[in-house]
Image (cartoon, rainbow, N blue to C red; front, side, top):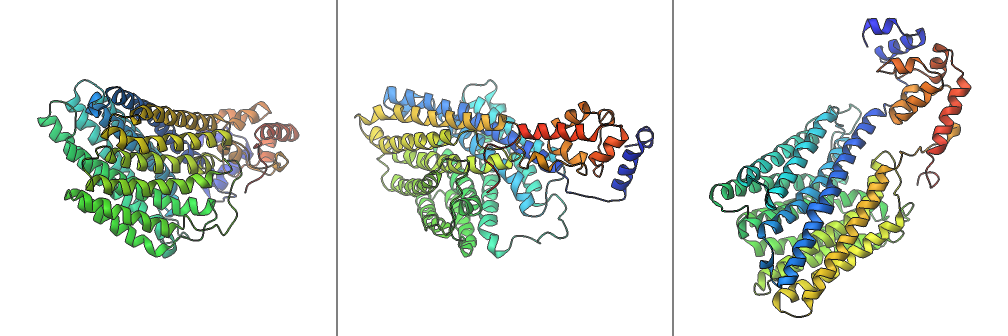
Length: 528
């Protein structure tokens, strides 16, 4: 605030600004956390849109066409690949990037100070992923669009990596970096992001080749398989392992994960990527199976809990589906090996990918996402635990039908073809319920996790306005006239000082705030 603006302020405001200038602080600043939560919300909403429309709806359409013709040739290969890109990069990639940008810089002691750069990642990534999907379903100028989409995704990735690992000034009292006891979070997540970069480089190289030589936006089968394996087993699955070591272990009350496995898992993922690049797919799939078993052992997923399960506010039996997701991962890995050794069983490869993408990734996200995302988004509560349970049952039944019938359907003309559309509609129902539940959760007002009785005259105006922006209007209507004429609020100005500056009734101010927070009380009392 400049000198001219300061001159028109009441004395109490000028003194508070002077305290701020001298570095006198009373409490932590809630504004950065709120800005970070808004950024994460944008990633989550975007991921949900990709999941519901370009991802699942297009996937259902493809599967209905395939079932009608009883052959994969019944639908455009470009549409199938567009569906896969929307699911892997548009949905899963957007979720993981958003959570990483929100969580990892704080975990590493380097919180993002320029949140606009994170918004730039969101914009570049969203446009790139959406453009890539549009190209696959018939957008004009597909040659240019295919390459441009790849460049945008790669640019978003590069900026995200800078923000994750290099940007931000480390607080002096923060830890110097991940310790040995934190390796199972750090190394799989880091390795996963490196593999994402590799996948995007491969994607761009394929795009350039197809744009130069192809007659349509269809990736060659071998190149497409390489891209999918790198994106799944190099990026999405290891990142899920890393975040499981932090969140699944805590929420399910499991024993401390086996951190000594972290380096081996990271090295194994790197070797798997080398096998993929060398087109040694059987070796890559065998190693993926062994890594899966090692990760499950390291995470203690099937060990009995040593602490109470955290059930408050979510579906009571979500822990069963968390464990079931890892069963699906084993199934997917085994089917991948069988697809290499039994090439005549044409449906095994698709069943393997579905077991990993829907059985593992979707079930894990549907189980843990409603537990962690609302709390990340300004401490919101999940709208409906019942809908969360419905989502988990629908996706499980749909995936079971799809994986069990796909290889049979592609190898025969029997009844299995009739099960594929049923599985598609069950999974579509699961997705729509999940999107509706998370969307309505985001639409709820931010709850106040403290009692209205805690509002006091010595509390700070800035805290309320930064944490709950609508309180600014509440305070103005209750008598704080100066608040309506300034852009900045001094961080050390108390409610009592602000009331004195405007000759306002302090009891009226406190009453208005208490009434506001009484309407924001959470449905369940207190925190866990």
